[in-house]
Image (tube, rainbow, N blue to C red; front, top):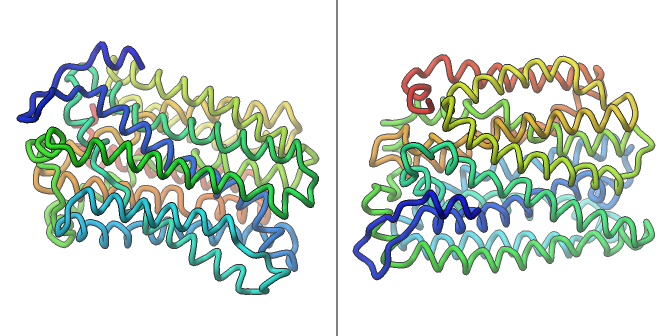
Length: 435
């Protein structure tokens, strides 16, 4: 990250010190790593824990499908959270909004750690899990702090691709830590102990990280220097109805632009883990270690995406990656059914493509909106992108694969790639800004 600091110009404010883009970048990475760690802890538990704890009376496949259905609730609730917390932001300020949202996120996450199983409370176990998952989704909608948009808007002209990839580093970092915690528990606990109490510890860790991230982000966003930056860049919450009226088309296109990377995101993380657990003899512990290695590859590819985008343009990189993901969808998912070597090839290729595409998937969102809509438009675009591209991906991919084979799961990935290509082609204004 030293290169970030070296390339960063100072941003002059009326406060007591000058803010650098590298300082914003640190806050963005802390916040995103915390959020993605929460995401992956829940995602891994959706495969390894909830089917057995909450739905033990079903077949393992049906139980996993129901677990993935509950997984999607957070993405459905996330736009609702944005509506609620944007109103809090307008009326009470960004600090109150962020505190309330992260308190709700932490409470919902730690509540899952105390989730009783079906053996104890019957169908209430599934109901509690649904409630806690919706709470996470609402909180994530409110956790939008605008720092990623602020970073993109204040990046040097010749380093926009580099700074666009910074927020995305939180994804592989969160995956590495979450996979390591679960792999450690699986390796050192009996199956009974893991299902009884071992799986709960990562959720407590997630709560602790939320607290750390809250204070780190609050120290930034509520200071006079940052408030001046938000004001100067017109990053203030606008009313959702007015934003949809003025920038609704940009929001929709912006949500579809990253579909390829978001669909691939779930194919190589959540879906692949579920397929290995359900249909192969490979241990979950070993595959989590493979995912950790894949996350390292993804992290390096995200960094590379920043360099490449600044040389060839973000639009061309995203278009190339979408085409490559479309080609990947035609053969790669079948590799999961060919043994350990095939699964490793699926993961390595997938994580390289994921890093290159995901690294630039949201970098140009803020700049495509009118000034008065940047803050709210960016938040809504992020919510819809995750809903369309990620919310139902594990459920849809597993449902298709179990009924029609792995090739059908590749068809789902192909639809995401086509969605990205269509979005880039339809909206010339957005494409021009991305480039």
